[in-house]
Image (cartoon, rainbow, N blue to C red):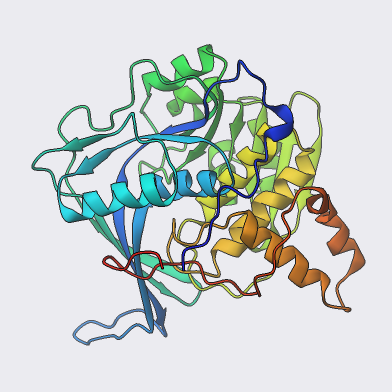
Length: 363
């Protein structure tokens, strides 16, 4: 059964106004068809056959972020190219009909096959193999003038600049940015020209330290505020740390310990949770806590977009952890802000969310 992730709660209900843009978050990028194998005891060995105890298929790439945002109740618009093969049709249907994502800015490319990623999850990590070809120009159908939106998420790449980022910022859109690994090894912030248009930058600890030449992720976050108003550095098992350069406010929240099945897409879910809390006007520490919680819930399921939690999952977790007498009171107080907003749920924990493979519909 597919659960309703999106309609039970609008996190922005208290801040919406009649003249607000119809779109909460705009993003663009490449959609992959992800095939995920889980339950592997070790990495595959050359010349042998490995059997996985679990598998799933879902839209991946930028679809991970779009799905995570939509499941948290944000009106999400995605500009992407889709192949005209069965994989492309499946991804389009899953995102538009299954997740309620606006694909009006997207396009189907005739004669182009969908990019594919095979992800192998084992020992709490993942190994990925991808194949695809660039779509005919424009590679990503980012409109010359992006739609009015409260926020946008941009994935920065060294040496690249996307015209839509500057235009979105000029129109008042709050731009949140993440970044990938710098294969050039230069780690030069000047090579990220779009960063100057961003309100927040969310690298992981290794990326932050390399870009700032520091040996401490917290020092790296402070250094980044010379380039962007708000720096958020994810610390892996230690949680996350943030610095608001406009006010000097800092916040640090520890990670939630969970048994990880598949980390695919956890970073995207973290960003989506942080964007949600920011647009809703929550305090910095609450935003960090919520982002970490949603990421922790996501790694307990397989797949990127499949594992993104909605409010039903967050509510079920919150009711579940409060049912134990041995919970540390301080840890519970960290998430007490959830009490006033979560829907009542009767579904048991843990919840199973994923539709396992192409060909099975919701029941």
